[in-house]
Length: 560
Image 1 (spheres, rainbow, N blue to C red):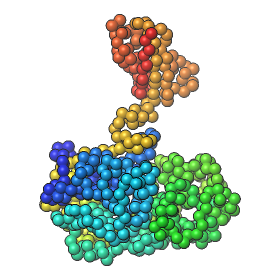
Image 2: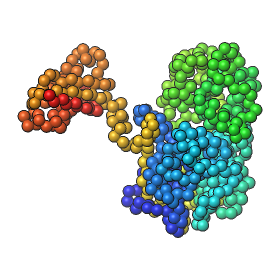
Image 3: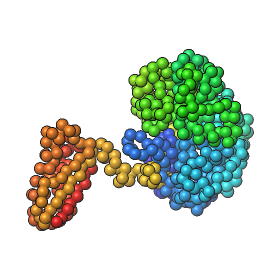
Image 4: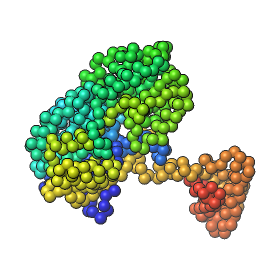
């Protein structure tokens, strides 16, 4: 969190250049970055993260865009680096408050249009398609898209030129010598940009702790072909739907082993449609729906499934618990998890793995065989990028605090003059005389809760979290004047088992509430608030002493 002693920024600097992360710095996901120059703002990426067990009922989390909303008149545009959810997923939720143009290369633009259509605003949002390697002018910013490689088509670094210096924003990237889908990283152009002069690099930190190179998709294809050939039963591969290169790799490995390919999961079909619309996945042959593969011999089918992170409603989870209508896995079958474990998802993933093993399925991860490479750079690639760009300073983003610090130290050791580790909400002056944190901006988190957007600290979510931890209780009182007409009615959720009730657990609560109300004097009994508070305190006191819990408690008072 930002230093509260710093002044709050009110507008973009009139003469200078600042960088302001509102999400995605000190954490992985929810990327939302802002550049300020000569009175104007430019946003780069608007992504989401996903809910966990700590936020019941919430699937999507994103950075609070209140600051940008207040600055909307001076926001010249939103530029998208690539189509991953943690970089593009919040546009549909935030755009109605910002109402500015959006710029993306073809694959990201096509994917974004689908998401906008789901929210019913696809005809309102001006999405401008930028060709690979293209340039846009958003005064005072000039932005050039530079092709890189990643685990999705068309990842772009951005060369952001300003009157105060050039900034290179990496987005998510790696230097894959054999990417299979899309062009190679444009290292020639990166060297030319370095010759032009780079003031600062805002750089991905996800894998900065990994020495060496991240590896090649081509190597994964050859290894997966060999691994799949070892099995005679059904084969399921779970991977990220957005990893189009991996989809092509798995399909090719399946064909090489005489297997037909079945896609299981709505997001897989959606991403395949987008990829084909943009010229990718043109030669992969026929892909089957789950019901079409139902009667194929085990040795002739390969399922590609969503849900590698243990998502509760994804295909792999439904299959593991026997809830999928067409896909069944059991003894003699194998599931290959061709993905990494995203921090925070460990419990859900291991629960999924254990359930598959319980059903007799062999589980193979990247720890067991070479079936995955990361889409983010190892240290060797980061060093190569800095040797090409030769920046004056490096600002690590897209990582937890320890990643950022390691990245800053690594950059300094590679000859970069300055590196700054900052937090979401820090306004970092890049020019003149940077890097220096000069102000702060409000930051927070929003959740998509059903069909509404709710702040993370809203009473709704606070109560929901309390109910998950402490249970809930409802007390109904009926008074005729100052006299209880009958014993209180107490209903609890998540507090007592049937055995507890048989042993008088609920009766204890009824007595405690009744006694508390009857102890009130005549004046207090005519005060609805005093009666309700006495009942609430009595019930919570008993449960705190008995169970160590303070449930969310509602008291309904009926007067005759």
